[in-house]
Length: 350
Image 1 (cartoon, rainbow, N blue to C red):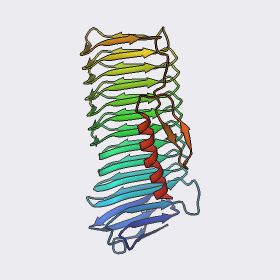
Image 2 (cartoon, one colour):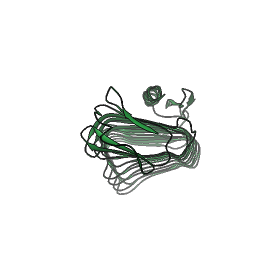
Image 3 (tube, rainbow, N blue to C red):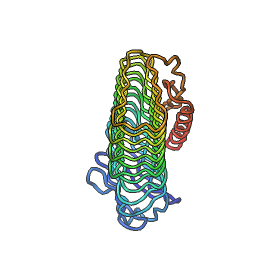
Image 4 (cartoon, rainbow, N blue to C red):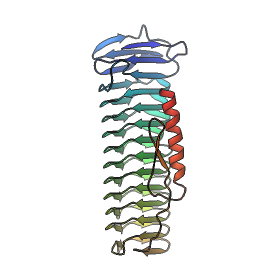
């Protein structure tokens, strides 16, 4: 593995690593890079870093388990590009500030932790496998695309996203857990599998939550605050949607439940209309005695005839596509938007 500074001021870390790769800021524009505890290049060599950090691992080796930590130590860089390849990879970013973060990995169980401050959006394109994404710092926005596998995306209680969160998660038992603050909205789309979305009691969303979950026994638990609307669409399977007593949705709460034994419970506050329809006449929709519905309540179990919401397309890593399941009107924008950004990310990291 080698580390150098380009004429344009980029820190370039490339090749095959023997172990943990540690990238540490040691001064203004100076870095030290170590591989498996051995210093590859120190701050006297890696000086004049004024732009990006580019990480391109796995040159000769294929599907190696790469581990990278980046400690910016109060320094600021423009963009962090990381191409990790196949294998069970980890990337841990903390300390300091980056303008953007772009990560691409191949098949394997990858783990990404984002701390510090990212003043722009973090784009993560992760391959098939049981991937995890943990946000513990401050991001302007987050876009995640994964292949098949049981993926987990978590916005921790101390985390803050100043714009929006978008996630396209592949087939598998996926989860999205939000305990922190998101100034914008959340849009998530999944494929087949038993998926779970949790908007915890400490969570706050400045926009709407659009949850479009595929076939499988899915759950959505809302206990926090949503300043916009809640929109839920489920595919075939037994889905459970619960708005806890602590939940506060300022706008409408809309649910379209697919084929299966579904239930929807509302025990909190919905400032607008509550509208739930489903394909199965035996589905159960319960509005609790202590619930507050500011607008009209419309329940139509067994009355839904068309799922045709069009959630858009998932984009594969190499430019291929596969169809998403049903979603809400306009949610195809999410698929096109994130898919286009993923394509741009892949082009940049080739």
